[in-house]
Length: 215
Image (cartoon, rainbow, N blue to C red; front, side):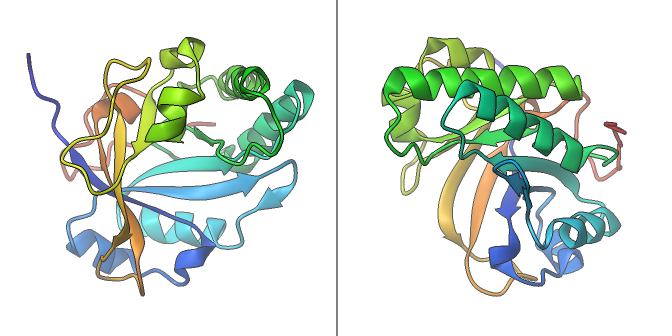
């Protein structure tokens, strides 16, 4: 079986402060996921700046949304908000659902909210979409219906992520939340990504900037 090549990546939000993406690129990073939005109205304060500077550095870009929905209706509204925020932007990675704070939702409710969000996001963007999850929730919370979407899994301090779940393989692996990268003050999440995380199957492994205008 052909082994998938790994793309060095990071994920960022306003918590990383003012990032020098040119230095990030010189450090060997080629892919950056950035927080775009949360809830039904919030936009990350550094989203536009991070997007603009990452583009200037010719990095491959992906976006994620932090889900806070407690119902299917709210999940669909949050998906539309996310789609509005990233509309007209150039991006290479699948738009991602980051759903990890469940409040008092049952397992069934968590999965129904997730499905509603992902289906709505796919419909309004017309793009492949993906799910971010830690290893525990991937195994014990999210059910088999979500395995049709690429999985970006968080699992730290291990030689390989725990895939005793409904997915056959991972598309992204967040292997530490304490990484160091030139151009970023303090710690940052570091990741490996494969081509499974792409909105199209064009390779992003070269330095050429193959852009997808995802409006």
